[in-house]
Image (cartoon, rainbow, N blue to C red; front, side, top):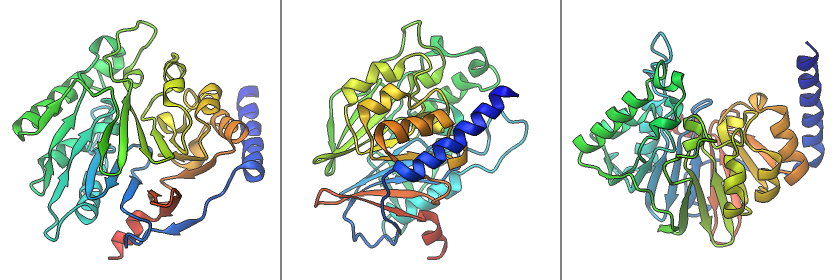
Length: 325
């Protein structure tokens, strides 16, 4: 009981401090008129799961695919986000007939809330995927429940089979060096198959992505946390960024004080409800970088637009716009 009361009090304190210290950014509803340029990171609203669309100069890449409808860890079928994501792709990245060309898809790791929608996306006849960055599964890293009720090895094998059936180029040795993607430069982090015994669980195998245009950058943390020291291992090589997609949906083991001190994000985006961010994470963001914190759920999706003038503009209500048009 004492711990619960302490956490509740800490949460109240951090909210008050956020209101006092955090930076604020003007939020405008997304209109898809290209007014802020052609370089965007679309953080889709898939509740507490990840689906992020990169857009730059007519190029598109999808990082993770949100929660699917057939999660083996659940006893009954749930409402996944496959149809919602496919609809968004066709309206955002599609041609006049709704045909979508994705330069790549990336699975950051193989938890179902990150790869659950890929089967439907890859099999859609209107979606063409050029390349799949699906790194080899580190089975030795998996916990017993990840092998058992979560069925990660089976899901991984099915995903690889689908890539091959669809004739998609499969890349399992991920590039370590930065590469161009339209006007963006992308760099993958944690690219090697993890064999260090200090790491445990598929979250420690998460691939992070740094997105850079000019002097502005974002780091997309997937489910990277510091529970076993992964943030500490990566922080210095990532460096300072303007935007941090919080690791592991804002839960306690991620976005540690040292990680936030090193990256010093001005904007933090969480793929979850604001109220589900753990108090210690809010504290770190507020006290160590004065980050403005935004929720993809509360905002119904967020687009971070990297303008040619070197600014970052945030637009929201991505799905609301499309539901009305």
